[in-house]
Image (cartoon, rainbow, N blue to C red):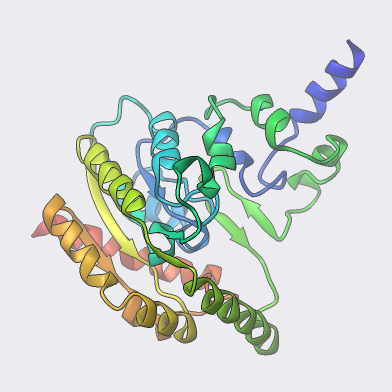
Length: 293
């Protein structure tokens, strides 16, 4: 019994430092939501949207392995979203990789997100969320207490509103090394993946579902020059594909991919937080402008 009491107390200290996902399952269900992978989790700053659009937002983007578009993410979205939502604002960040699949994967049970917490979590609005900690926190629970945000925020801090704030050395040499590594990674990945009909189907189903509950905006986040070149070579028609989906679904698409030089990136792939605030502000302005049309 004493062990359970100790664990219950330690678990009560879980916060944005615990890991990069915990807070997604420990806040009240939102009515305005941001979807995507790690590009979206770092580049779309919920607080900036709140300031400009006068309503709370939740960034429900995880990463390319855990939250690519597919049935697992769709199921999780339905659990996460406030069921009373009627006039929500939904920002779906998407890139070619988040709707692609490795050529070796043939069955849905082999999709990488089958191992995502999104696939086995039932409770998305419990604080503390012992279900998440028991299923997905693999370290000693004493670390939850000793590494809590009150003792100092970690370099990857997940805010209550879902924004993953990454604090990292932005010295030009450090950025260049990380960018080179990411460029090599994506070059290699490009050789083994293709756009996935299942993922594109799920993406469309998610748009269909959210359209009944509010306004949907598709956003393509820019990346560095080298990664943009890889994407454009591998997927030259991706921006047109997004335009086609938006037209058929009667939703707006904001494609910032050509403006890659306007922003700073931590590693070529992820936007630096100050640039993320700038991009998020531009997305909010685009939403405001589209409402006036």
